[in-house]
Length: 151
Image (cartoon, rainbow, N blue to C red; front, side, top):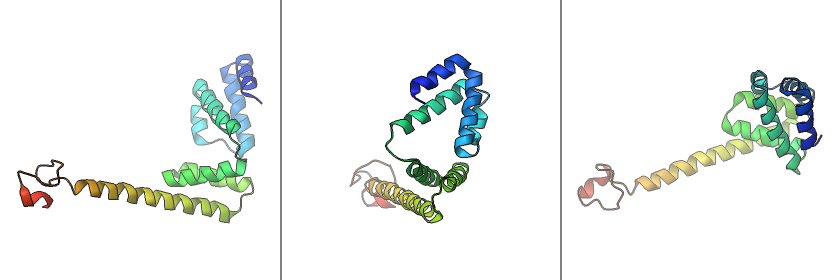
């Protein structure tokens, strides 16, 4: 279905029926309804706009479903969202993605998350070297405290 078809269906069915149909379609596609979508079912306007947004991103992408799911696994792992990670691992498995590819996505995510921690921390460390520990003025040589700047 196109974006216009989705909008027409919502207008014809009404938001409550359209939301219920969306949940059925999600369950058929993924084999389950993600918790966040279940939570949104009492707010059909929010659910509908969330799904329309998701669909627009996927429709505009040239990535296949398996690649999208491996990215979803990696991002879920990097964000440490255990609920998302479990869901996306199940979906990836249901799509026929081998465990070694799912593991590779997780390992890559872990590597990037680790690099992010190190990059952020070392930048802060470099910046703090230039700050007087006594007065917290950012200069390489504190005129007030002199040699005490790194105490």
